[in-house]
Length: 84
Image (cartoon, rainbow, N blue to C red):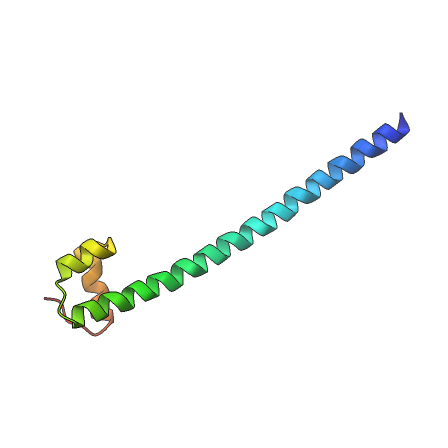
């Protein structure tokens, strides 16, 4: 009976440790995903500015980027491009 108690307690501690490990890994995955999203957002902003400088219409840029036109305007202003 004592062996069963010890085995059950050990199994429970291992399960708790696995939860903490999973939490830590999940936090890292979320942090990595946020970093990737930030880099992708910067790349998209650069592409929006380049497209506008190449003569593409803001309306078309907004549709392709999935942004509202006002967000495209803000990105363009920040990139040194005056709105249409």
